[in-house]
Picture 1: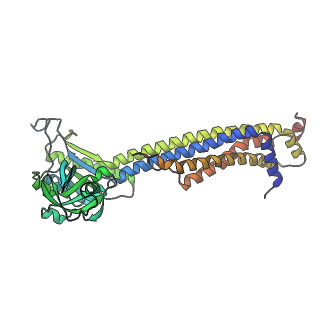
Picture 2 (picture 1 turned 90 degrees about the vertical axis):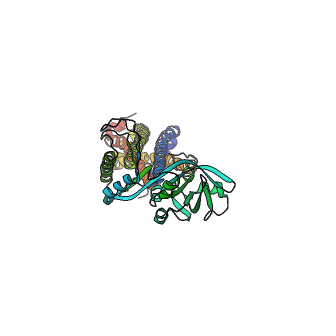
Length: 414
């Protein structure tokens, strides 16, 4: 029930100690402010990390060949391993029941691509049809490389938006002939990529055509795999680790590489990296929570000290109240009411300031691994409950002390 006399007492107590109450409120507000800003920063880190993983399909396992470092079966170290179509087909055949997406590429890291008077040096790759899913790209015009392109050795090209903009400007690109190292290819598609301009400065061609046209024979540069999805992350991680080890063993055996020579076959498992990134992000967010809560505790201690002083100053008043029949609960509630009021108002001020800062300044702070710092509704709700709890804790011990005061002792207090 609303008690106007109780509120008058609270405001009268605050007005008598304006500076002390203000400084205490600032300490509580700064605690909430720091906590929310830190949690927003943690969310910004999480958004940045998730953005990195959005660039490609989830759970990619990439394989490439390297240089041996150990002698094995009479073969000297320092051999450059070259993967071929048979390595890829044998890998797919053995692990097909475990695979979701599979693709291989034959890469050229720089080649002259031109149209009319416009030209530039761009990366081009011979790819399999499923490679577009690996890159998580989006076709905005035309189509992607298909199985017919591979079987017929078509001179088809899917170009990134940057190449399209550089070479064609505002003109239509579909159906036009471009020169890639003086070989004609027909543009059949244009794509965008979450990785941005760097990824869009590429041209994708049928792998079979690239191998035949540019002297690749049956060579491949990389193999890409994703495993079938599982509901449990730990299970997915265990499966990906076993798959990578089995795949390495297969490729080492086929290419006569020592079992303990990890330089001959390189493997990147994004599932393992994702766990490391998300674990790091979790630790950072827990640290932020710890720092913010410690700051709030410092403010709560200040509120508690104020309430102890107020109890001391009002000892005689409390004695009179008890002598007139006030229950211990009513005394406790009176002190708690004031404590929760000061803490909640101060905390809301800090919460509002932090949310405004994240809303207006957050979007301006952008980097590759830090994007859109924000605090969602659940976190804001959590801080609200934290405020009420902090206020109750700040006032409980002074209130409990006040309730234990004996009327006769309180009336003697000077």
